[in-house]
Length: 193
Image: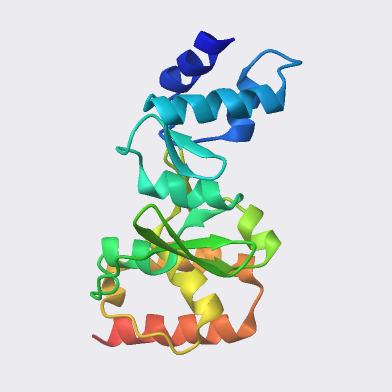
């Protein structure tokens, strides 16, 4: 069993593995208590890196977006993180913003994560959310709508970076008249410029 654990971890494409993922990858009947002891042993010997309780990495070179989405699941990267990367806002944040089922601010292994609650139906709908293999990330249009869902008066620096055809195709998911009015105004502004 000892070599199986490390082999499974090092063969995995994930850079972050949860205790549950490691347990499920091992043969049925593996003792969770024994596994915890083995993982702690590997961490103590420097063969494994403990990022947070129940979250492990091969070393410190893990994907911080994957970490962000493994702390709370289901979740996906969105809001200011995506909007800055795609040029919709110009303000840079070191915090990683994540859509999930609860609101929390967490600091973990030198990274700051801001979890924002969105309703379950939105969280479960993959429209406008891309699978990057080890984590999910919103498109700029979905991140724009997620932000409007939580803030009616948010300032966006560059609305021209958005594809409003995609925005209007994702908008019905939110089933929100207030958002529909705001999106129509924002679209009108881009047409006038």
